[in-house]
Figure 1 (cartoon, rainbow, N blue to C red):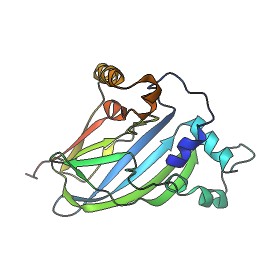
Figure 2: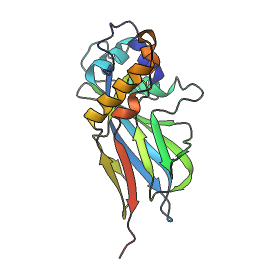
Figure 3: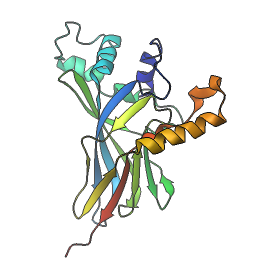
Figure 4: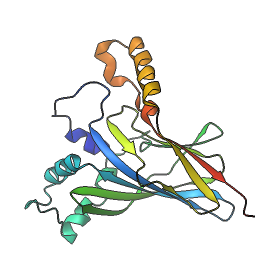
Length: 208
């Protein structure tokens, strides 16, 4: 994902606090028999403009027909996991009782280009963590990328995910408060993405 951000460095920046990339996500959680989360599969579907930039930068789909060969798909697979600097969370955060749960490094799974958009899927593992009460948030701290869990969060019954969308008014107010604290020439360091993130809560009802 960091590599993709670099592709936009040459573009004029729009108004502050507006994302430059849009990603639709689907999250599938892996649970063990004790209802502990042990892993996940995450799919990112990039907007069509970002897809175009990525394909052009990598020299793929030169005829622009939106159909990649097997060799081109093999080259594309894992492209968004190449730049993964120390401390980068992958824009995905798990919390249990208010404490962040570490996620292991991602492993590329699959990639496809459908209707002019790249969908890249990767897997991650984590120390078995009770699903009940788990909080999940997906966001870019700088809000350069806007994520939407349009594909939902999926996990085995009886566990289920409740997704609460962000409150635009609360986010705007939080941003206004942040701007008061930082000089204008330092706006780029603001960590505002969390205010625009969906909030996911996992519950597990015991089977009757």
